[in-house]
Length: 136
Image 1 (cartoon, rainbow, N blue to C red):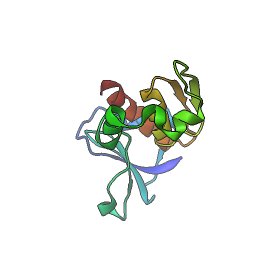
Image 2: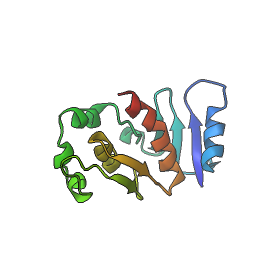
Image 3: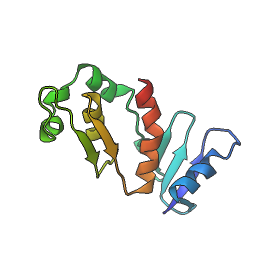
Image 4: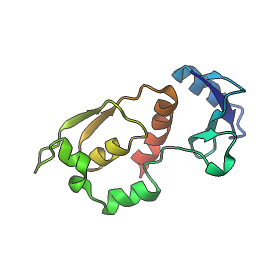
């Protein structure tokens, strides 16, 4: 997949090249979308609209952290849809992981979740965000 690849970490360790090789990404300077490695996270940006900010995965902060601590959990629609009842916590395959919102809800109530994402940019973002969720 071709996308503009940008490194804003200031490091010279080649982390962006390793990431690109792992996910099969090729640098395209003319692509209007950029995958940007920042010191905090990996984010997707629309290059011609900087005010929009970047899209990134962070399971350990903001609304998701609040949702995990105080939110619906078993009462969430996705939890009901997979059949969580009593002590029954199914193993779940989220075959359309996207940015991991449903998987996050299911994992936070105790399900074992395997996420699959076909788009390599989004898959890379999920892989980047997971350690922050594990640490939270």
